[in-house]
Length: 89
Image (tube, rainbow, N blue to C red; front, side, top):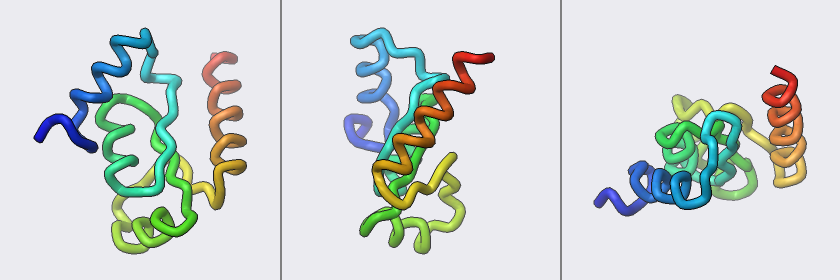
């Protein structure tokens, strides 16, 4: 079904409806599907490695999120730095 992650149609609807520019946007999640979904719609994928995220990182070593953050605070710190770099460019 194209209506579920990681298929991009639901993300593309979200982008269009909210006038989001995907290149500087980030997708935070704790599963492989979240990372794939973020990548599929042009977002920078950030994996939170609490519980599910840690297991998915071990199970799918080829997943390669832009950042594997140990918690939401570290994910937020990465996102803020990412935003600063994008605004400076």
